[in-house]
Image (tube, rainbow, N blue to C red; front, side, top):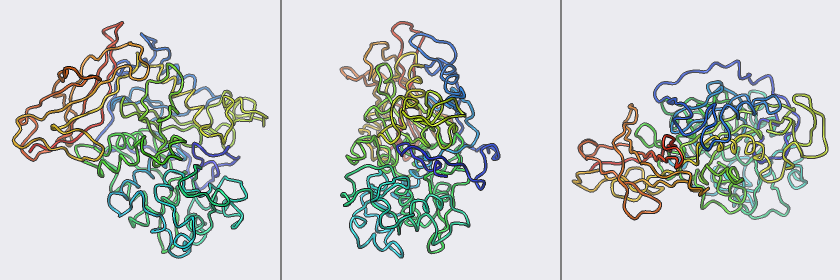
Length: 567
């Protein structure tokens, strides 16, 4: 069970097995959802090479799949989505363990709801929800009194992970970490007061001695995230899954399968999202779509834009978290974590997501309309690294038979426990090759003005000027934004509208705004075509770049959407 909670920045995963109480992936059927469904398209129509190398591609998606599905890398599922269209799918509708990726798929959206509707402030002290009963020290003892919700959400609270073997993490309450690790699976064997939440509130330790100020140091902590889960559920009076199903899940989105249910104090039945739950890849991708669109789905705001921005922003996060490429719950690409090498910078710095157990990947890039999902099945016990022979770093041999080794050559010489070590395999074997499968760098696309107002990170609905005859939209296209090789030029910017229950409708191409750099394109859409006064519609841009070598080759990129009300 230790491996089930492993995050993407934790220590080397210990040897462990999956308990019999958790079903295997094959035992749970995929259940189709009503409403929104992903479109489908060829990779080539979305600017990528599927099976044949063309133009600037140096990899194809088939070649990537062939490489990572080899037994030595043991990828079981691999899905690529561009611009709301599934262009490559190997197993996207089959549920599987996503491990710590549940933090981003369930924990983050539930936090958004808590910020929006349950009186939780990101800067609030966590003691407001943790200090009752056995958790009294949260209200009386430093540093517990000063730990904030944001620090729990960014792994900067100083609360030890259950895998931290330092003396400081177990000196006052020896054995609490093992007790937490066992109890986090939930179920009738681990009910109050032996449940994981009570153990975390009552017995968890700090990772430094003497304790450093909360927020000053980074340590990936499943225990800290579990405490965040408790805060959210205590504040909202509902379990994580009930929050997700009632307030987050939309038509076309599925739910997590059998997440751990924990019976804790006051008769509460809560969930945790540190691991264990299963998702199918396309349902997980739908959560990322919602987060990347800052909560806009089917012409409505699923929680306010500003709260989605709070959990997905790549700038303005706590310094200790930013140093580790972390924001609020999600990890991000602000320091080129996922796109380090020259020629592999075709995704933007705004890319974010969450991995699990060192090899499962859920990432989205809102500026290029790209989502990537990968499940890596365990090779060595407790490990699903994308290593050169499929074994846990420090092991040698050929998967699934591995023997203990003495170095980290299997993980590109990066030791587990080193900051960012868990990203090396997925970056080298998935994310960077994926970028080689583009004809040329995809354009970055963003809406900059809606209804005549600048697009910001807080506005849910933009209002056009009173009695205006047009709805004015402006979008920005940046070609070759991070490679600068001049392989493409801006071809056009298309604008689309969305209404509830209908497919997006193309409403026209924008006109280049003279003198703008990066290039901006404007469309003045007839107000009568928008609808009656007071009506709200969703708009987004599709920025299309064209090859300078072959004018038949294009790469489109969808922007984040905005909502506009006709006044």
